[in-house]
Amino acid sequence: MSTEEPKVAEGIVDLEEPKKMTREDWRKKKELEEQRKLGNAPAEVDEEGKDINPHIPQYISSVPWYIDPSKRPTLKHQRPQDENQSLFAPIGDWYKRGVQEKSVSTKYRKGSCENCGAMTHKKKDCLERPRKVGAKFSGTGLAPDEQDQIQLSMDYDGKRDRWNGYDPDEHMRIVEEYSKVDLAKRTLKAQKLQDELASGKLIDEANSRKRLDDDAAQDHSSEDEDEDKYVDDFDMPGQNFDSKRRITVRNLRIREDIAKYLRNLDPNSAYYDPKTRAMRENPYSNTGKNPEEVGYAGDNFVRYSGDTVSMAQTQLFAWEAYEKGSEVHLQADPTKLQLLHQSYRVKKDDFKEKQKETILERYGGEEHLDAPPRELLLAQTEEYVEYSRHGAVLKGQEKAVACSKYEEDVLINNHMCIWGSYWKDGYWGYKCCHSMVKQSYCTGEAGRKVMSTSCVPFEEDVQEADTCEEPKTLLQMHQEKMKDKKKKKKSKKHRDSDSSDEEDEAKKKEKLKKALNAEEQRLMEVAELMQMDERKRPYSSLMDVREPTEEEMEAFRMKRYRADDPMASFLGQ
Image (tube, rainbow, N blue to C red; front, side, top):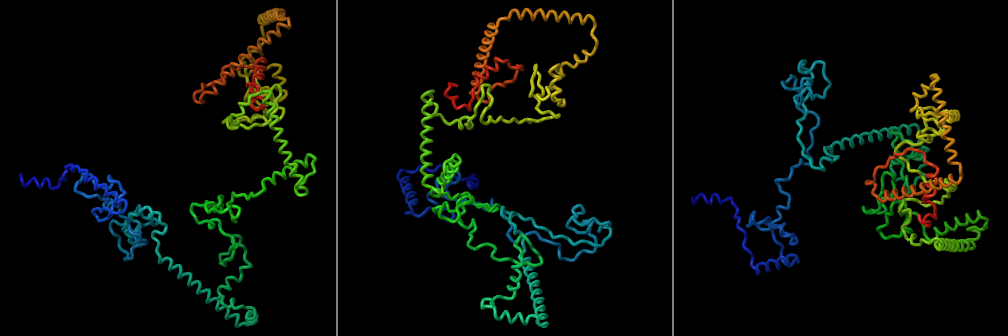
C-alpha cells in the first residue's frame, strides 16, 4: 500500500490553500509593487524569462492557487498558444499548372477516363469535347495526366492577394518580347536611312540641321526625336487614338496646378472623392491657415470677405428704389444711396415696432408672443391669405392639400370631373354630367338636363324602370288619384299652420342655435382627439351619409378657425 500511494499522488496537484500572509510580509509586498511601478525596482520575470509589466492587474498575471499554487506569475496564457495556431501555406506554394511532363501512355489504363484516357479524372469530370469513339474503345489519342494539386490553406490576406500564383518569369518573357520588337524597329529605321542617303534626299536636310541645332539638341537621341516628331499634328488624348502609332503627348497640364489630394497629405483632412474629383471641405482647415489667404479652400467655400454681403444688399435696394421713382445708382452716387438705404432701414424698423405695439395695446396677448414659433410647432409657414365670408380665397395661395396613397384626379370615360364631385339624395356622381353610374360615359350638358327632369339612381331602381313601361290598370290609376288628393290636403294644412313669417324666422334662429351648439360639441371632441396619441385614437367612420343643412353650413363657417389669419391668435380662438 505504501508503494502505491506516491504513484497515485504523483499526478495530483496539491490543493491546499496558501497560508495567510502576515502584515509585515503584506507591507513589503505592496512596497515592492510600488517601487516596480515607479521603475526603481526591476520588473518581475515570468517562467519564460520575460518581464511582466507591473501595471498589469494581479488577477491577470497570477495563477489561481486551486490550479497550481507552486507556479510563479506568468503571462504565457495571454500569448498565442502554439497548439492552437493554424498553419498556413507558405507564400511560394501555388497550384501546379499544365499537365505532367512525363511520357504519355499509349495504352488505355484501367480506371482512367473513358473519353480522353487520363488517369486523374473520370468521364463525367472530363473537360474535353466528347469523342465519337472514346479512348477506352479506340486506344488512340490518349491525353496526358493532369498535375496532382496540393491543398492550400491560406489566411485572410492570402485569399485576397491579387498576386497569388504570379510567376516573375512571365514578366521577363514580356520584356524579351518588347526588346525584340524594339530591335526590329531600329534595324528597319537604319535600313530606311541608308536607302534615303543612297538616293541623296537627306544631304540638304543634314546641312540645314547643322546650322540650327543647339548643344542641347545634339544630346537628344534619334529615338526621342522620332517620338516627338508628330506630336503637334496629333489630337488631344481621348479624342483620337491610333493603336498603330503609340505617341504620348507631354505636359498636358500646367505644372503650377497642384492636385487637390496633394494639398494636404494628412489622412484626417478633407475627403477627396476620386470619382467626381471633388473635395468639398477645406484641406487646410487643421493647419490654422486663413481660408481667405490659401489658393484653394474647398469646393463649398465662397469667398465673402469685407463688405461684399452689404454691397449686394445695397445694390438690391438701389434696383427696388429705381423702380419706385428714386434716381439712385450704386456707382454714380454711392454716398446718397448709402444714406438713403440707412434711413429706410431705420424707418422700417420703427414702423414694425409701432404696428406691433398698437395691436398689443388694442387686443392684448403679449404673453403668447413668448411661445415658440409656429413653424416649429405646426411645421407650417406663415403666408398672407385673404378669405371671403364663405371661406373662399380672395388673395394669396391656398394651403396645399395633403396627398393620399391612392390615385387622385383620375379622369375616365371622357369625363371632365372626377367621380364623387357631385352628390344628391345620398348618391355620388359626376359633376360634369350629373351621372350616378361610375362606369358611364360623359354626356355633358345633355346629361344634366335629363337628370334634372328625371334623376333616378340606376343601381336601385332598375326594376322600377322596367315596370314603368307596362300599361296601368283602371284600379291603379284610381288609387294614384286618391293618393294625390290626400297629399294636396296635407300640403294645404301645412301651409296654413306655417303662414306667418315671424314663426319661420324664429324657427330658423332656433335651428341655427342648435347647429352652433352641435358644432361647438364637435370641435371639443376634435380637440380631445388631437391631444390623444395617434395609436390610441378610436376609428372614426362616416356613419351618417347625408347632405348638410344650411344651418349646419352656416354654423361651420361661423366657428371655423383659420390658422393663416394673422388676427386669429387675438380673437380668443
